[in-house]
Image 1 (spheres, rainbow, N blue to C red):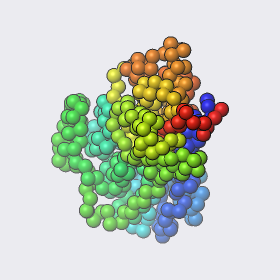
Image 2 (image 1 turned 135 degrees about the horizontal axis):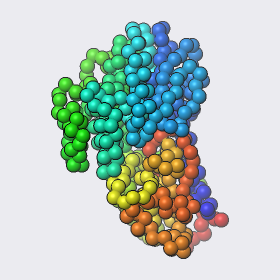
Image 3 (image 1 turned 135 degrees about the vertical axis):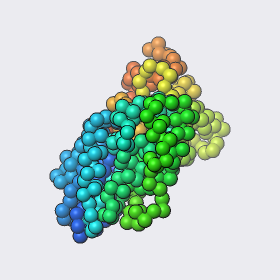
Image 4 (image 1 turned 90 degrees about the vertical axis):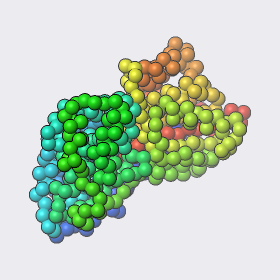
Length: 429
């Protein structure tokens, strides 16, 4: 690995650090209530959030948090459970049922502190009445494989759930509720982060049905029937039950991009942030990024090299092949196919939770040598892209980024470094 690639990995680490709970949560803690103070949480960062809350809390505290397998953090008074992600499992059902029971035990004068982060939607998986776990697993698998956005996926999930889409807040009433959230979604919509268990839901049953129809999903029939029943609608904004609910976003993708941008400027780079909420197919997004990188390199627009191009958001993958990988490695593989070893351009794409898709890597990186290295190994990057096997490709190139669970989640992080090959490189070795 050359020094430019190591620099890009350091930017990813800076982005993650800025969103870790130990730095962003303590300043948002509420005063203790006179009654019980109960923590309810779900998401990839929720266990770490619970631990940080415990460390800074004065007085009695209890609660229950569910996180992804491998993301457990030991707490003293808050129970930490693990469950399946991105496809829900029986452990998530059990954890959700137990959380609802705890929420319903609250009364006037009590306080619920809801810790919500990305991944919470799959982890809080208690099916609505009349639906089974298998129903939800089937729909989730279909949506994950067809390129649906997180907004579309969660519009469906909320309406198939007994706990998401504001129903956890309903169970907490008449207690007061403070939600502390880490955003992993484009536009930072509260009702989309973890499918908004503690906030009102503006989406409708009709929206959920439209998503399934758009992607030609017509099964299971029990799901379609459920979405056609008006009585299954989620709690909406404006009701009196929300008067005692507060919401605070404590970390979001933009602040992680800002942290990386600051580090880039300190290194003497001209920096542009394309946006913190880019969506769409990962491979198509990469084609656009490649075009911008070439424009910088060849025409000095929209900024002069040495330049750093940053972006965030959540891209998707439509599965057509039989390979392994996630949106970030697919982005980088598509970028490699477009750039074909363009001199002076390095890039990285990683999921800030440390897990890209279902594999053990956060993402991958490329340098100008990556394309020729692939050729020397007799690897055709385009064929790997056709098979959705970005993980296999970069594993052979030894350019996967292995960070392990970061215990936070502010979505995808992408950085492209553009240096003029006719000038002395800023990063050498």
